[in-house]
Length: 434
Image (tube, rainbow, N blue to C red):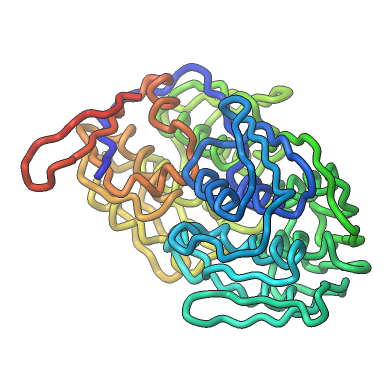
């Protein structure tokens, strides 16, 4: 029942620290299941997705403790194969990484179909293709994925992905790490979090080469040992604050980033007239007084990220001119458009293409966070709009942004988290002002 209440018209100024990458963490946590020893993982983002995955490992028998706010110690030495908690697994997309990790560790796996945000079909056919090539029999029944090795062990194979898939690339890397022989993944995805997963596994004794290119080679090893590792900064969280600074006409120094990972976002913001200056581990974003239209097409890395599509759409609603967004990854990622229309945006959608007539004045309204990144778009629109915006279903936002409200308020936003604990009573309780 929590909602965000945003008073718009504020300008973001100051500094913000970026947390660890969600999309890396949700694969690295299952990867810890394969390690015989203690893993110390630094820069762990404090978000609901990582909390649920850590709870799943704990239910499987892992020993987990936080050494500080962002450093977690995981010991899966005594873990034994058993059913993972269904209610938790069905809530997150990353539950499918347990297929590769469990197959590698135990020779069999049982997980739910992927959950998480509902913005299009999330097929796992490429995951299944990879596991089958490695020597597993995979079956889907009653909402569960069952996988078993044919002789108790996975075997290296050459696997060509029919389409570039981040999830399948990472899942196959997990499974192949402890397989016998060499695995070669062709047409692999190249995202930074794939490189981070490979680096984590290599630091624990794996032999993975070529991560970040379209051909990844994995020489299977007998076992993984414990060690320490720090997760990379979150590319999408950083990009969201960059867009928020530009949309509000602010000036924000975004720290703890890898500027190279943000180049595709920086390039598009510069096209709008926004000034983006890069430093060693930070970027400074200065918004323009008159934002210009741009055309955006989402593509696999190093192209413009699909996860940044909703946030930049919110910005383009107030940019001058007609902008076109083409979604090149998912079939149905424009559900949030109706929410922006409630705020006065003029957007037409035809399949995978959205045409935005910019330069409109947005006004506050009650809206929904349709999914994680759509929720971030609603927050940006609410900060730009005149008046008050109330966002429901904010649990989606908290899946991927650590202390989002607190960080934005520290930059000058006016956002409250309100708990409407008594539906229909008209009563509300402010539980946080960030």
